[in-house]
Image (cartoon, rainbow, N blue to C red; front, side, top):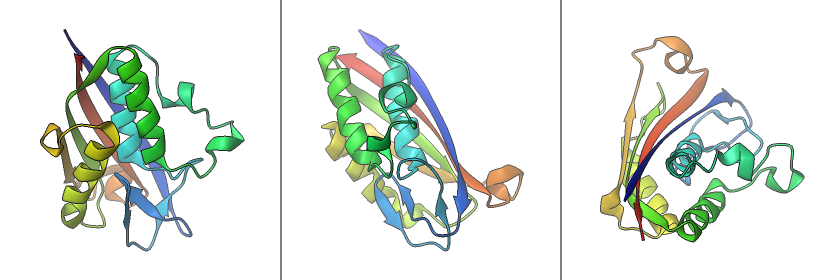
Length: 158
């Protein structure tokens, strides 16, 4: 049996924060604002996995009102989400994700993002696709005010 889920996340870019995407600390002049490390890619992937199984979203599992998640490493949270999925009888079939950012250029970091997600989720890197695009200077991402990510997860029964 297959289940499909979609995830979306967005965070504002601000000074004084790290830019972490897919567990990769990317050198940049600004970073993403959020209760955790604000890794929009990881958040979209987790929401897609949870959505596929009708288990809500990461805000349900890791509320931003809980002090224990302040500054949390999203890859550690992803490991917990993968375990929740396994306990519900599912594993990743494949993940397809897109990061929307005008800057910085993400191509040099894509392989490491894919490897991080695969390692944390316990699957092969060939099951994880990460792409990056700009919005041709349109909208909040195009104006470099924030970064967004979409992800689709195909989950298969164990």
